[in-house]
Length: 144
Image (cartoon, rainbow, N blue to C red; front, side):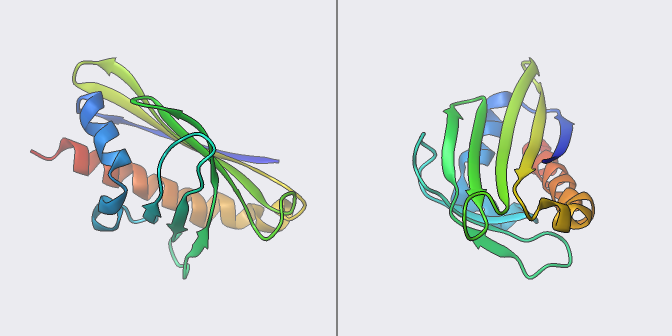
């Protein structure tokens, strides 16, 4: 098992940050890491997600939504080929600090037989992708 945890403070109301995260059609405009998402964010639903870590051609997968709490968190789990080989439990969460300040938590727990083979790429390119998305979300939410 391997975990990536990132977070960023955003000077913006929670409702605005959450609206940007849930505007799946808008991802291609502002998000350099998760280039697209389609589907309905509902527990048990399947999403279509395309990620593109820096220096990568990208990867398309179909994770299942595990948790959806409006205004708080979206969590999904996807896998490469078959469950148990390379699984990712991905979290996008917003924590209110004040009426105009939130912390965005972006993390993923990777598990499966292939995780040791990809650990270096997870700690470099994938982590860079998370951080780039966090910064882009901050810019998008804070622009007037």
